Length: 593
Image 1 (cartoon, rainbow, N blue to C red):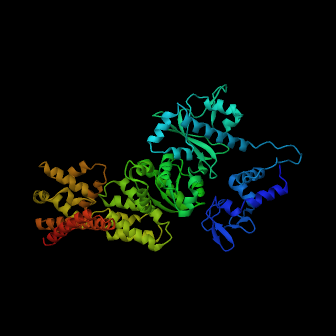
Image 2 (cartoon, helix red, strand yellow):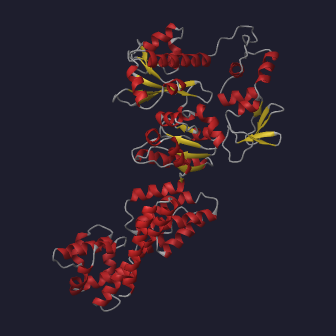
Image 3 (spheres, helix red, strand yellow):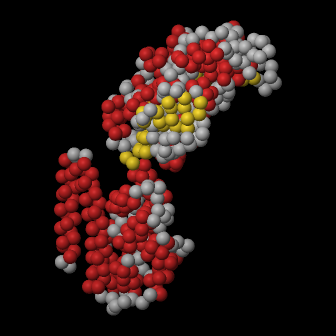
């Protein structure tokens, strides 16, 4: 193995304070004589990674890895020993003599070094093409119109790749780089017959992707106009592993550590624009497919994340996928909601960084986000079965909460938001949460989605007595039966009656052939009517159903009133109070009938 003289190693080791070096990769906290953190080399919840400044060593009592600053850099950067020495020497401006091998043969520069130099030169070339070339002017104009300043373009070294096809090849070979090095960087490709080497990126805006040390390891390339694909990214190379990098982390890691929170966005512009406007604790996931390795990388700097993906369906789905990874990594997770059609880039340009930061501060818990997503998937909460399905969607996440009190609080909030008044369902939901179950018991669910006594009685009387259909149905509206197990059956009764026809079991069976309502109809036919049908009895059942619906509606109004008070929305509050008064009066009126 090539080596350096001891005095050279001592000079580099003495210049590189291990606490300063390690703190660039993990968030260290002083504890006694040591600094501690969660280990960057294995996944853990309790910090067992120790750094001792006095002895200039590190040790993880979880995985057993330890050593000096050279060992740390070898492990964290995946470098051989000579490369780790050069890495630190360059960092501290120490000129190194040529390393030697036991055979006294000079050691050639490593391939990694050559690739890094090739990437650095490519960044400079693309950057000059954007700022100084005639061909790059449309790309520069596009970036400026998107709100990116020249200062930001320079800071992030944004560039433009000429459309010719061989511009980079010619430039880089003229600088002494081999075609093999360019291919290994993912900068060029070969034709199918192998006779021609051409640029990988042509006619695109170039976003350098840096590692945690700020060294460019890859590119994201955006097409000009509608040319597909919209984004083209570097392939995996010796320098670049997409699943182990986060865009912008080299710029934002200090702000993330200082605030102990990261805002996760999706793409390059979603990072650059907010960062330019002063939101600095950002990081981008290089697309929507977040990986466990990216979560582990972010975990070196914070264990709190606010997910701020696009509000479209793809962004919502990506947010849901990311939650599992963050929860497995023991993160505190919240979700930032933006108006429909506005990603972080657009929102910050329209509403400003302060409002974006306010929304991050007021972001909702991941459980609230999951509930809202489940409600959106189900559509209208028009029957108990949908409410059960929504609760079953969030119960697996509720079960992960260690605190029984917290689980109980969420059950109460969710039940109120879903309008769950059924005491049996509410009790079963509480039991499931307390016992950390991921599904509601089927027996309890069956009772909830079955017909209530009043709706069953009313249907049996109406279908068993033609006169009552003529007397009672004109008094009804479809709104009276919203949310009931037999809502569709009542709706069909009203439709048939409006056409001047008589409702029968036979007709309804034909209408609901193959649907769940047939089982309800069979139940109504088999069971005996508990009492003689009369108009008074039928009206009493109808009023009981109306009272139940109004009570549920009143509960929803109360929830909205609490939200309006919290948001200091006086106009909405007054409107809701008026609604509550009207509903109260209707309930009083029904109670007197």
